[in-house]
Length: 271
Image (cartoon, rainbow, N blue to C red):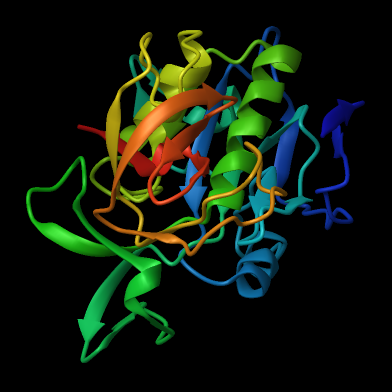
């Protein structure tokens, strides 16, 4: 992907669906921040909401479950995604930031053998993780993000750092902590920041390659190359599976289990 005159292009980019919900141009040296959100619903209804002029909300981009991107607002325009917000002395983060919406249902409630979103959709356990939100104290169930989504968001943030000099990557939950919980604990926000904003080379943001790890996603594909187009070389690893880490590249770990292969590093927790 690349940016041409504030428009995102590339093989992974769908035809833009332009929203009228935006203000004027960013000020000098802006945007310098990325705000990451979840849609709290499926792609199409979310797209309709963010392009509806009566709703008064938008974002610059939506990242679907397959990692594809739809642009809604030109990247030099102020979109309406942050709402009432503040962070380190700044008030109203819309005028400082690019907004990325990721298709994800957010918190879920257990219902028998499945888990349900607020709008009624049901998910099986492979699509769910249990975790405590950074602003809460009680464990809840959360809809997981796909490895394709995380890789796309990582690439987008890297492009924004290069193109616009972005210095901050924040969650909506950090700029409106009493109102919002997105992107939630299922998204590896802290690791993304360490990887992109501190220049560390390894998938977890550390300077040294860890020796061992444990899978934290419900299901994690193992591939023959360190990218999402690599062929799957074995059955997916399940949550809790232990692996030996033998190499890293571009946010991926090469691991050894019954076979050797590459997994997306943000779903591996060091042991």
